[in-house]
Image 1 (cartoon, chains in turn purple, red):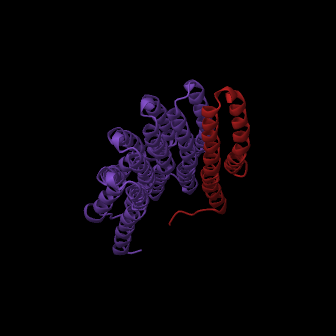
Image 2: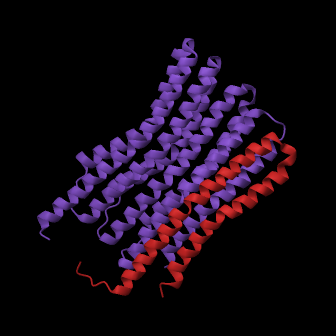
Length: 320
Length: 86
């Protein structure tokens, strides 16, 4: 291929990365904020006199749910105006940066939107507790944003630190983007489910709020584990791989796919357990330790497939 | 590409990508399903704390069954990585 064509192709692949970042990155905020808006409309219909406080809750929740979309926008703008790939491997790293933040933003915004929707519903039911409900919403939402921050960090590393020189290394970086981007989806939706249950529970029984927040944070931290596995595999793929032949390159790609997709289900499942556990804490029954034990045992079992996915990914990177 | 790729290498490469796809997508279902069971167990225990051992046992049996496809994926991935590729 003539040098001019390769240059053009490289620039084109980098620009596709910008499109992937913003296109996929816009999914979550749209869904999440829409859910919050729907619940707010429902609340205002049932309790028109509480409209200002419901609207305020909605706007605060939506503003937080927007963060993933803004991360994606920033990366897309950087990819369009700041970075310019001149070689194909560097272009693939830019594409990977787009995949990472695009996919990584989906889950956190959906999860944060779920929390915002639940908070709007709760505020409509008991407007007097709005301060406490909004506080719980914000704590839960900030926990749900961690996976998208992992994705943002990996995106920035892929754009400004990683400068692959060969196709093999570029494919390892592509796998890194897939791993952290897809791996963020399940965990952040799961954490959002826990946060949503906490907003609901605190409005029902404000006196049990300390138990509710304990269950929410423990459940959320278990739900975030798969995204941490994905981040670890992604960092290993960026910083500990060597240039190799086609077979090893395929193994790197397989590792990224295994860990990225493998983290979706466990994150989501642990979130479901966190949701029900948090709700149970809000009922204020006497045996908290029993409920906490059940939640943690269930989450540990649900985590198993993420561990398998990580084992397969590590074997693909280091053994085969 | 200037580098010559043999058919055997191509098969190996495909097997490794296949192992990743098998384990990656295969892990989605069990994770969601087992979490669902865990959530319902939490609900059950909170409503009926004295039945906790029975509920936990039922949860674990159900989760063990829903784990099966995850283990199939793991087995297939290991076969693809270590048995087929010699």
